[in-house]
Length: 138
Image 1 (cartoon, rainbow, N blue to C red):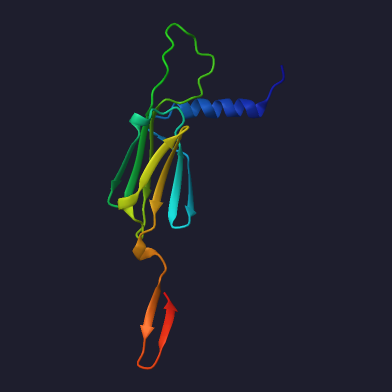
Image 2 (image 1 turned 60 degrees about the vertical axis):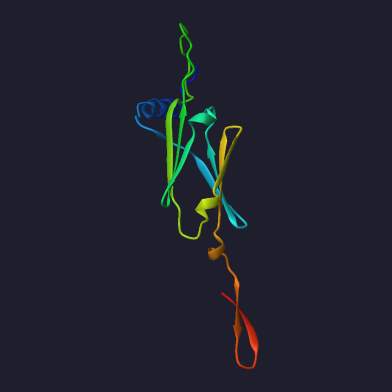
């Protein structure tokens, strides 16, 4: 067997991260697709019934819980899949239609669709003068 110093460092870092208490962060991707923001959060192995999504003013909070699998009388060899609480918070800016936010959970990925409000979308404003009409993009 050969000595792998980087492997040892990785195992040490993993061991230290297991000592961390409190909720763990949820990894996310955020993309703007047309007039909608799509937020995808990885929550593999989480019971959909434990997912809680709250909006308080402009603060969007995602909470979830993954319970540990019980193995009576078994000896763990490797336990890398974390159980416990997960939490992620986002401050939403103005110009989003928070009344129409929707969420789905499929294959361990929570997807939130956050539409841009109509008032925040670019629009044309008609300008009329005494002799002519012009169109200005605002």
